[in-house]
Length: 516
Image 1 (tube, helix red, strand yellow):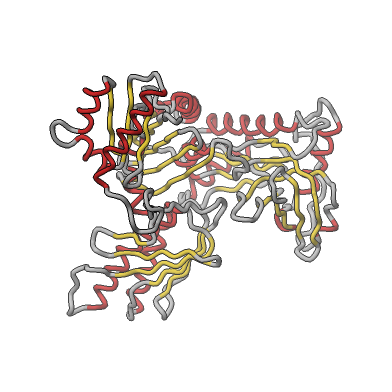
Image 2 (spheres, helix red, strand yellow; image 1 turned 90 degrees about the vertical axis):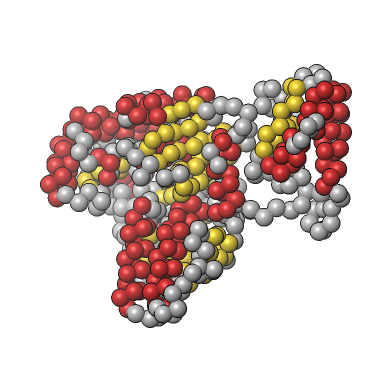
């Protein structure tokens, strides 16, 4: 499997696409001013105690108060509060946990009003980003993720990833970490640490501890809400968690972010630094590599597969529903059961990809083609479990029911990615009637004449729908050629798949859109 990462930066957002064997499997869009990322640690203030819910609402700076349940306080909450109090009271606190005297664990069956009170300062970590009308979901079980290790302050437990199958390797890693781990710290050993030497693990552990201690040195007399410890930006977080031998290239269209990524990769995998490639030009990165076209075909209500099979994906408030249809696929009339199994196996591959791509969470119900043999249902179930192993989100899969339904629950920590692929006609605004498309050339020319008068530019770059772009460059003399001769300006025209039919934009030589 060959993986490629594409990072496209524009004025308002950063788009990150992960391709496996040239097929889009993950897509992230983040605003440049995005707040409240999963993993961020905040100093917040308790606003309201809800004994009925056994939870509290906490102010961390979001418009809606964040939600903190009693079970998310963690057993070491009192130790964390004692540590926080020490750091707040002193301008130069000793933040080392080696000499810290921990407090007793809280009662797991206790009540929130026994532990918290309104106005209290607490340290929390974002467990789930704001979704819809809900504020962030919080936890006080703080963890700091690294490349090979996850540091868990106030815990003395060392855990090893279940994905490391070798008992000998699990024992080796656990022994190494236990020998270098200071008191009052716990560690989760990640899958990627398999085969790593003690020196590398020790260096990362020291770095994570330093990160934790440095964050709490600056809390003297601060006013909440305040970000204490920020998670890595999304691009570096993806690299940290997923970078391995299968990564062939990482393409970036922004020089600053490319340099940041090179520095980060150099710190974790120096030999991989050369795979980061700066790709700049007038054409967008997603357009160059055909990613926009994949997005258009994969995010609609109907997803068509090459074999003629298609999926209908519906979203409701309570759950997601996926219907599997055989479509125009050539079938064998003599063995309907085998046909159904083949269709379902192909559909399962696309469904597992769609869950990652759209980041669908909560309850997912899949209506497969009916099968009657128990062994075929079991085969489909095992196939889906194997496909979902690549999914980093926590999930649970139930066998196919007697009604032909498969139920999946999948963890959701950020809003689902929902891209509208249907386009409203820019001319008729959805009324169904437009003026003659033959006039599009005249409309663009009129707009160019206006720009020629109002701006000093000699270079104009028009981005338009592929059909319009082809129309403007077709024949001799083409519209483009006549404009160049008539107005003595250089005019470039490039197709942009993501633009609606009659929409176009004009840019200067620096790639900045000309708007007057």
